Amino acid sequence: METNDIPLPVKKKKPVEIHNYPKESIIQYSDSERSYTYNIIKEGTYPPAAYLKYTKGQKGFRIPDNYEAETSLRKPKTRQVVRCIIKYVEKNPVYWIYYGDRFQYHVKSEKSSSDVACLYAKALNPETKTRYSGPHFFGLHLEILQQTRDTHRRATVLKSFDNLTSTGQNNRAKKIAKSVSAIFDQEMTKSCHLDDNPNLKSIEFSIKDNFFNFSFNEENVEIKHKARAAVQACDKGQVTREGYRILSSISQDLPREWKVSAEKKEITHEMNEIIPISLINITPSPSDNSVNSEIHINDSEIINNLQQSIGKGGQRNIINILKYLIPGLLNRNVLDITNPTIHLRISGDGRNVGRKVKQVMVTCSILNDFDNIYRPENYYTIILYPGVEKYETLNVVLEPLIMELRKLKEEGFRDNQNREWKIELYFSSDWKFLAMCLGLNAANSKYFCPWCEVSKEQQGDFSYEWTINKTMDQVRENYTFYKGHIRPAIFDMIPL
Image 1 (cartoon, rainbow, N blue to C red):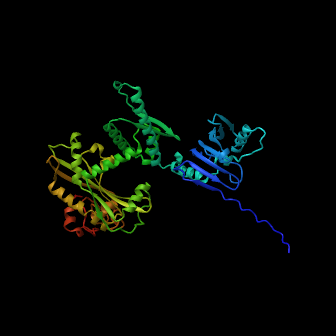
Image 2 (spheres, rainbow, N blue to C red):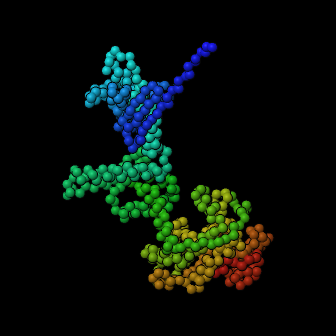
Image 3 (cartoon, helix red, strand yellow):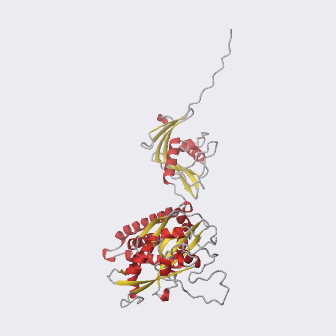
């Protein structure tokens, strides 16, 4: 019986790479059709994706830049060794193959690796029809080299300047400035005499329209003075942090925003040492929808800080504030040690911070400084808490302040030079806050006046002559003595 023998398909040999790369530079490669040995001199790097080129064909291997390798092909007895080089010129790869005993000959192509491999074959034998695979000739297909380049690329790739955070941008600029400074120091030792005393003052450059200026060997006192002056200007001009950052990017003579921010923190720390801020725990009050919805403060940073501070209030000691202010007031002749009396005014009001949070602020000011009495910087915050103007809350929050004011009224205080000062107290606010502190009923109640006993029905009758007849002593002794007073007065030490 005859049978037809059908030959089985021959399985192609899978490509094999034998190496210990990168510890050793030799890579052996073989498949069913060819075998090569590569000695990697420079593994090269992949250029940016904008002009990275690929080989032709289905696989399309990436073409590296600054790549150099020696390739051994054919059998060992007839082995040929060539040196393959790839470099990008004007964003396009150029291929070289050097051959000969000392690699004294070469061929070059700007078309492809396969084209330069064919030029090499024709240089050996013009009649040959041998064609080499360019990617295999150069080793562009080697997986270990592709993996190594990708690893190095991930480790060294730089983000574009626009994709960096502000901190990253500053760090990159600092790194450049340090490198330039190091180069200056090296060149200084080579090119200058010891007596020349060369000094690098500043470095100025720009990256993506962002200007940077770095000063070197500048006195710390001068830097600190500039930063403090910038803080003062920002406070007086109400310049935001973002606004100053933009301003400093335009003018390189201004201190950097991070330096000004650090100086603000240092000033705050110093002031907290001189005038400590103590916290007061309060019970959050329900929102008072009857309060005018007009927004007085719409700074998002302030709003967020207040929302996080619900249930807590801040207090500063008046005596600490006065001790800090007195030396300056004496130098300006606002106060007189021969007449040691300070006229202190207490004020209070509620404010809307955004549409969700309200705050109540109590301030003090020194009336002796009558030339500057209307300037906002001469009002010093002594109580601040998030909430609404409500008698029950005020009575709790203001308790430490009330005790301090009573002591100041009765005993006065001594400053840091042990000088004794008398305190005369005054009060100022809108009607709502004043009536609340006096324990009055609502504005639409029958008896609403803080100073006299006129009724709502009598206010249009001009036959009556109403005078200020209420006294704080009487309110303090018996608040129900006057009609309309339904609670004890809070500031009962300040006369009406």
